Image 1: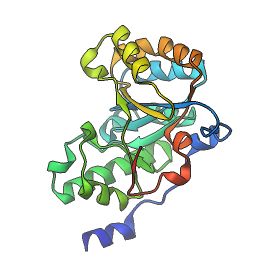
Image 2: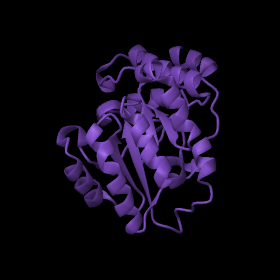
Image 3: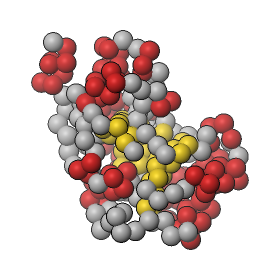
Image 4: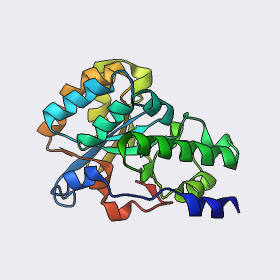
Length: 225
């Protein structure tokens, strides 16, 4: 009954502005890579956006609801500049250990605050710590959310060293890859100009997850990549 109620009240999905911006990039024909950033928006997110804007590349940001509450203008800017945004829950809990009602509230609250701040209802989510299961995925489906994981993680939160973070990105980079970083780690932001320049030199087109996968493949209740 609870799920049926959610189906009646779930948020209306909208298309991805970021996907439209990058519609001209065909990742079936060129070498693409998606840089993704979790846990923001934070103090260092604007500086990262400055770098991405200067380099004319797009990324994907999985936003924590309570941080969107704190910095709604940064969330708006992220979307306005052509990046993709997704749901990273409201308070960043370990979802599999939570009761069903708690998981629902985490996803629902984040959906609402992101929509209020940006005008866009996310169609993607990433579980905090990458911890998920069939129950979490089923509940996410009720909100029209596809689950986006990664092909490689830099562990930038642990490295906290710009040179090591850059080396990790270059080691993990591969065609159609999805790399996990954090816009809340200052050293990641510091490393980003060098990372982007080197990836471009290696022939990568840096795109959003919707552009990489294709909007039709981002189906609610399915996990990617």
